[in-house]
Length: 368
Image: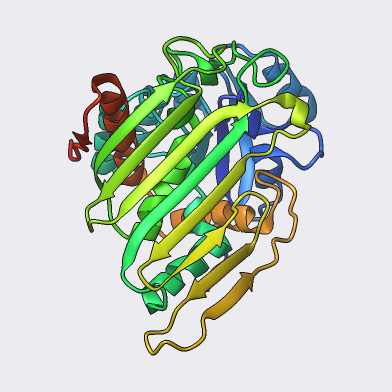
């Protein structure tokens, strides 16, 4: 079998924290791609003229530097891009890349609203490029094991999915309120939009279907995030299967607790048992199920190691998730998660915001 040639990669947008530094400190996308044998970083692009372009010139003198996406596309030879832009700017950039036949990964969120993402979805369909949205959680080893347990049946008929998520507050000294991730015009929503999409997508995966309707409430208990964006969102979902789910997410943890790590708890319940998982920093899944014959409970703990790995996410599984996308491109294979999934999550978030505004239950409008 002939050896595959390296994919030439361009980083588009350098201001997002997940891009990481140019030093060998083991963080972010830059460190991830540097470690991939199948990838070569050939260009950096930032249309804001960010000072980080000067860092790129210093630390990676062999790469090309662009302050215009159009110049990057017309002048540079590359196969795939890593797009880390404000949600407002992702759709237009993605359309340009798709029309040029370039595959790309996109950091969430992908648009301010689902309607804003539709032109990008159409461009991807039209041009047949591969796109990976930045929702990795369904690929976590524990998520995959929980999905297998659900399919095997010991938990019985599915009943409920509960997910609680808290992270550090948007306020001076913590998450910078002036960052584009917390702006009405650049992001389009608060904690539900910026981070809640991760867990809506995970709940879709575990439920095995989309969300039919949502009832939601939002509030601003901290109040530094740009109005009218929310610090706290509470949602109740009705899945197409009839299963109910709840999501509570908030920028609520004070910086004084000494950590910026997310505090996440997930419980999946069937009529015969349940499974508990704390996703952030954990590879342990506790499962309990009651046999129908009235015997003793089935109790087990699934534990998988999460070896550290320099780069985005800091673990091997996230490195392999990104590398799998590069393999999908080389093998001309559709990614397991794609731009259509990203659209459906944003359509769910739009419905949640409509419900919070109107005080009524709202059906999710799919399709384009």
